[in-house]
Length: 100
Image (cartoon, rainbow, N blue to C red):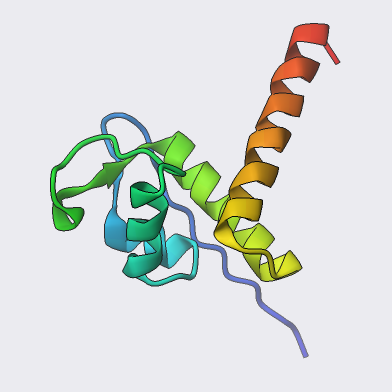
């Protein structure tokens, strides 16, 4: 018996940001979770005033997905996941500077 794996992609850039619903879906979370990320200053919106108008760029999508993964895999709260994400981003930046 053959097994089939289906992957879904989501193209995100300045010309095609994602909505709050799309961001929640790609993080396998509820929209309320995304609202919390924005209100806590963990993820930035690209545009929009109200949650239904919000649009998110690729950096916000990457950051939200990483936070969701850390919360799921390590059962940590939002503050810990955000701190871990900040530290991982800083390590990546330092490695780029060093050329590693």
